[in-house]
Length: 193
Image (cartoon, one colour):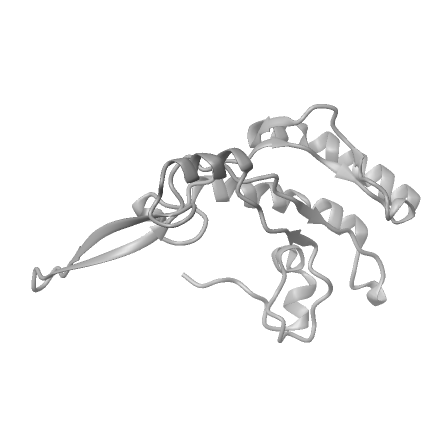
């Protein structure tokens, strides 16, 4: 398997994945990446629990494994540092930007339509894992208590307008609410623009 990245401007112009998630910095044909993912801190409650649990290192544990060579049957012990299961991180912040301009290379209607890729990406993340060693049980992620806000150019410097009144429980709830949220964004940004 390879990681997808467009190799030229023509491919990039029609590629919603590269426009949303970005391309390597050495590419000279890209527009601004639509998705910004901020660092997600360990919650205070999880930090307190991990400190009380006296893990191997502050907030992490050492898991010892043994790799066995399938040809020679030689065992090779190794240690892996990982965050213990059940740790809660948050709040997470993902910022999805909608752009216009750049000589027509940025299309706000297309950006709003491509928002669905963010939902798909989060669903894939829950079904897969974050980081390495997922086949060994590490990196399992669940997204909960989702809020959605909107900030147009005129409101910049202010707190985003909440598009939902109560946090959504999980990605299933976001999937249900998504068409209406996407339509609200479409109406507000395209009408304002």
